[in-house]
Image 1 (cartoon, chains in turn cyan, green):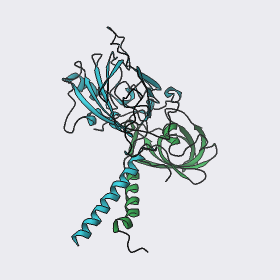
Image 2 (image 1 turned 90 degrees about the vertical axis):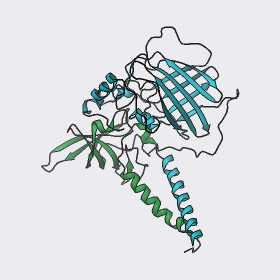
Image 3 (image 1 turned 135 degrees about the vertical axis):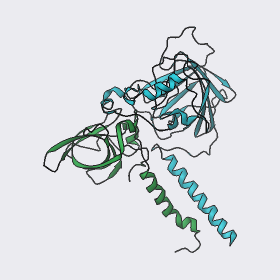
Image 4 (image 1 turned 180 degrees about the vertical axis):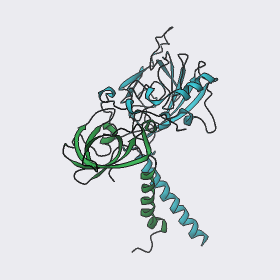
Length: 250
Length: 142
């Protein structure tokens, strides 16, 4: 009797797990391949990140949800005050300005990987790109502050390490309005643990707005049978005049 | 009826239906470049029936406009937000899914500012097909 009961339980749990996998893979309405195949590699032996990837939604709403469980954002008092004061109609992204780094938008993005250059192509928001120089160059001495900064990359084993400085202070980290300053220094570590997934850790070091560096953790699913489409945000952006509230999601 | 089927297998369709129903009932933010809750009220779902006057297959959102007659017979034109074309394509939409003159029924969430602006959750198209329209909780054709 116990055996039959435990057999039923195992069958039941396996069924729940299988259904959950199917449903979660449909979350973006696209086909995410089950994690069965090994990581692809390029001719030079590095993991191959080429492909179309989905967004990590925790990098959209409130970046506090990307931290380790129980951790909170180490905001300086002025940055905490500003976060509370900001209202969503002023979010640059709502106004069709770039998401910046490491904010994500709910659209697919593509990695083009060459030995000396890695490019991220974003469908939105906005329809733009990041260049990550892998040719050994350093950062410029006094980079112009920009939305995506100046990125240089190198391999640490199977991990792509991207170091970025030279940001402007205009973009928000999320819908919640978390700020940063031009002192922002971002270190991203990307891995492809299997064929279907990217994992990344992002260290945010901004002594202008936060009391200590903190680490965000993210995942991106491989999107197959899909493509980036044209996304011209300014074409028909009617939302801003109707936005009256603020994101409160934790 | 095959008596050898395990109870879990027999129960699977019921469980699947329950999970899908639950996923459709979950609070569902749109695929959007802006905060959903800053613009729309998830506590104010509405159903709109009327005639399509315009369909814009554009970014950041596709939109369509529907003439709706109120109780006094006045015609009010509603502006309805959909997801981006990319997200819509993966839910079965095409730029020709709506045509001027189509009669449609739309489940949507009202804008917080009180205007005739709403975020479509699903649309019953002219051919009777119900299509998911915006929410990340939707799984496409229902």
